[in-house]
Length: 114
Length: 113
Image 1: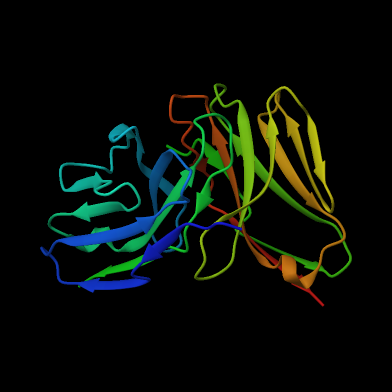
Image 2: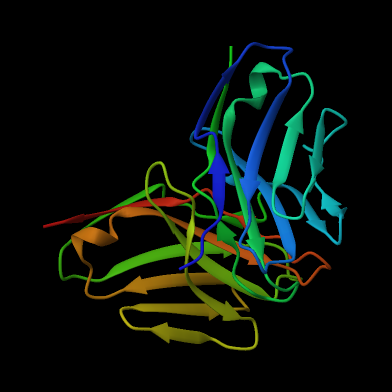
């Protein structure tokens, strides 16, 4: 079965540094998402992306966050200046249509900000 | 703002018995509900879903029940197997342009052999 691929699986960074988390969604999917899960908490929506633009974002997704689909296959999440509270597991997800179709999730990137 | 709540952080059942995982929601605009299963170091994987126009959906050992008046849904697994041991997330969407999912906090199911 096709899958969403995320790299790296673990990322350790110093507070204030920029990080880029990478995702390759399933090839014929059109809707892309980033979610995160802080340890012991629920999976939280960050942002959705369709037709090369952000379609919705949460309060968490402030000016320090940005997303990009630079080449038609990769989907990236950038955090410009990381904070300790950005430490979490970040999941990329995709779906083919915008309707009530299941999301396919990647295995996640564990981000640790020191 | 906990629109989707799973009040039981953990559940332990014996192999072969029924597992019942519960989920409550507050947003009456939710019109689609899903259950995801998550193993450690993996992303959530879709298990089963139900539309708000139905009250039951069954797929093999998994059945989801929806009680709209109570804003409650439950996932039944019968018979439970050790491989079912995982964290189960309830999720809901409200038919927005993006159909983003709102997740609950999860229930850790342990099926004892």
